[in-house]
Amino acid sequence: MKFILSLLVFVLFWKNNAQESTLSKQVSTFTIEAPQLNASKKIWVYLPKNYTESNKKYPVIYMHDGQNLFDAKTSYVGEWNVDETLDSINAQVIVIGIEHGGDKRVEELTPYKHEKYGGGKADLYLDFIVSTLKPYVDQNYRTKTNAKNTCLWGSSLGGLVSFYGALKYPKVFGKVGCFSPSFWFNRKEIFGMMEQTKSYKTKIYFLCGDDEGDEDMVKDLNAIEYQVNTKRCQCEHLNKTIIVKGGQHNEKLWREGFKKAYLWLF
Image 1 (cartoon, rainbow, N blue to C red):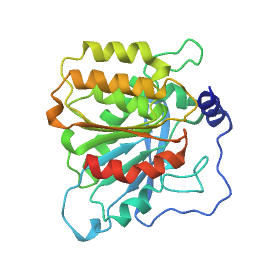
Image 2: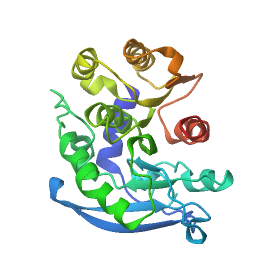
Image 3: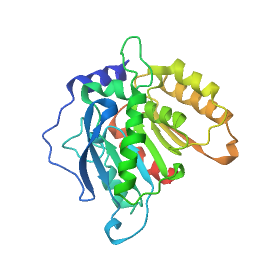
């Protein structure tokens, strides 16, 4: 499968490119210890334009693969343009981008071990977000701390761990951006979790392309959406699914889908 190969190349050969930085002045960074992972994590913080001039509190989006969100210089094969997009619509939201773990990325973003690709340490990664990072963010920035105003968002394995994270922590994450989720990695376990879930109140935006190199991508996404719909009344309008014709498993798809997804979720 083409996108599995892309995933492995991403993990094995990721490095900074030689482009000029495109980081917005709305973005800053800090480093925080992640004892759950025995590592330090670089964190990118996007603040809305009027943050320093107001006393407002803001919803927060926690996003994976922070290197690819804001800056062409640190991205693998192109950034998401999150900062430029949010600036252009004067978005009233804080975005926390979490550095991926490099060669530990597969471990951190997958809930269960895969017989071929390993992984399976997402519980530790999510505990870092919930128990270490979120308390720090809530203490140091003006945030709306409840689940309704807290979103988990990612693509590929980041989409998988975002969906799983909301299942595990429904009282923490009330919204999910689930782009091109790699359900194939833990398909049996994730579908099993959904079957055991009695109620699912998370607001979720699904997006994938129909040319991602994995014939099961659209099938898996539709099957998960069906299970989500069995856990609540569709009249609540809490999920939306977009299948992009010709869309491939890359930053272009996710960048172009980000604005509409944000506007729908918030």
